Length: 272
Ligand SMILES: [Zn+2]
Ligand SMILES: [Zn+2]
View 1 (cartoon, protein in one colour):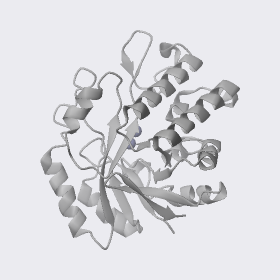
View 2 (spheres, protein in one colour):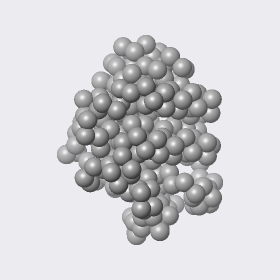
View 3 (spheres, protein in one colour):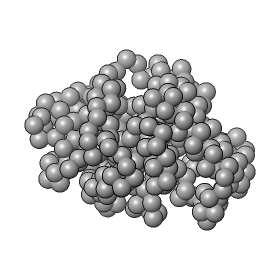
């Protein structure tokens, strides 16, 4: 059984456990591979995290040491979650420097509302009118994902449709224009060799993972690569392996043969 979690947050970003505590849990829970994907810092004018999310050499040195210490027990991979902001491409490139990541996960967590301010599309704060209504909101959100893919520095799109948390009803997800937008994005991902994450956190808050099962099925049909992660932050939301086996089971059901685990930015195939 494939037991990997390629989306994990430690207390270097907004998780509650230290990298060591996370790896000790991974051993306890029988996970074979963990990829750290702490949020990278943001441009200060958008979100100033102060001392948090430093992503300095000390953090990466510790992960390297833990990688050696846990060898043979858990495969430790060093990734990052890049919180995409349009117009800050050069900022990201210079801040991330030439660090050798195993995996760069890209996510849209900030989206401009009608006032031109950045707001968080995944967190309900009283409707989506501030973004101009459902359709404009979704078109803009997917537009940002498209730009992030075209940026050319990410390996994988995280929680593609996590904005579903914000919708009051799911009717819009059945409309043709919505399905066309999703399929267009998957085609772009295939063309750019960017893969899709099956993010188990969807099952914690909604009835489907992120993205919905039909999207995963379509990705398999189009030959888009897949990774698995559960966006672990805190134990109160579930175990470190929460949803991982369920994701593998679903992938088998939709006809996937393999998932990818990134090492040195190269996707290694693992049979499911
Ligand atoms: Zn995220
Ligand atoms: Zn995350």
